[in-house]
Every structure is written in C-alpha cells, then in structure tokens.
Amino acid sequence: MSEKPILFSGEMIRAILDGRKTITRRVIKPLALERPEWIASQRRWNVVHRPDGLGRLVLCPYGQPGDRLWVRETWAANSLYDNLKPSEVPPDDTSIWYRAGGKRGYAADSQRGKWRPSIFMPRLLNRITLEVTGVRVERVQEITEEGAKAEGVAPLFSHDDIYLPYYRAELDRDPMPYLNYLWHGHIGRGITAKQSDAWAHQYSGYEDARGSFSSLWEKINAKRGYSWASNPWVWVVEFKREGDE
Image 1: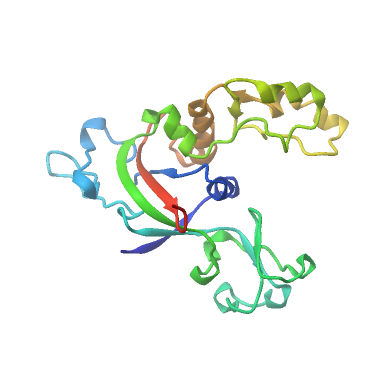
Image 2: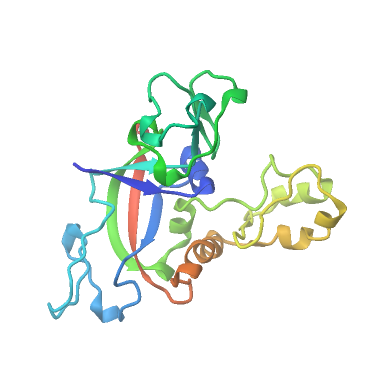
C-alpha cells in the first residue's frame, strides 16, 4: 500500500466532507489528447499505452485500489508560528484552521495565523485521507449523470443560500437544477444594488449534473489546454473517505 498527496479545491473538499464526492477525474499526462486508438486500459493496473507496443507505459499516479491519498488543502496554524516554515509547525500542540471550513484544536479564532497554500501542507497536519477503491481510463465526455453526481457537483439552490421569497419556489423543482461553475453560483447576504443587477448570471445553472460537471471541468482545465470540447483522456479514481463505511 502506498500513500500519495492530492490537491482539491475548497468547494470539492467541502463536497468530500459532505459525502457528495466519491470520484475524481484527472487528466492523463502526457497522453490526454492522443488519438483514441492509442489509448487502452490494461487489466487492473490501468496503464496507458499504444496498442502497437511502441508507446510509453504510464502508471496511474494516483495509485491502485487499496492505496491511500491524503488531501492537501489551504490551512493556517496559530499566529505564533507565522515565522516558521510549514514543516516546522508543531503538529501536536497547536490548532489548525482549514480554509474550506472547520478547524482542529481549541485555540480562539482570533489566534489564527496567515493562510498557507495547500501545496505546503505537511502530512501530519492533514485531516482527510482517502482510500482508492477503483481506477479506470476513459474520455471525460463519457461521464454519466450518476458519475457527475459522484463528482460532487452542487445543486444550484440550497436552504442555506435561499433567503429571497422569489427563489424559495425553486427549492421545490424536480429535478433540482445544478450549479454552473463558470458563474459565481450564489449571492451572499448584504448584496449591493450593483450586485443585484447580476442576479440573472449569478443564478445560471444546468438541469442535469452532467452539464454542471462540464462547467466545473472547464473552469479548472480549459486554461491548461484540456477543455471539455477537447475531450481528453482521464484517470477516473474512485475513493472512500477513511473512516467511512
């Protein structure tokens, strides 16, 4: 069994904590945009190769079933340690705050130090460990409606977000629309008149989870050259949170 670090956005970390996200799709490098006949999945090891035997073999960097992934996320320690390197922050005698929500320890929030990038989170300070339960290879557009839901896409409206009577009726819609991640998704309390002009765009959504996932994929990957339209090859990594049944 191996352990590897993995990064998620704050919204996807919240989806994991809520139990909504049990799958992640990651671009296969360097073969993401190769011709379809050049990609194949070889038994449970899920290596990617050219069938003619002349291409490279690429093992899944996220492991195989039974391996573990520990999640790095944006975090903060007690302000007393702001001048220390992340590796020097004592893991046992300080509180840790997580940007996605929640904290470890009992220090007052006024003692929280500076936010630190997820890439610099030490293993001993992380709070989420995932067990890999399955790995396969497919094109990103092959995702199903159920697969999109397992990716953790959020409903467009929730009881926490809705406070204007005009939008409360949307809670009774069937099916519930899903968030468009290329827009903001919701307006916070205390909106300004200028913000109110953008409501039509803030509440842009999709009627299905698959459409919502396409916008999430576009938001994260289009700028890296792997747009939804390019339909890249991806690792599909299924997991369960350690401690969950």
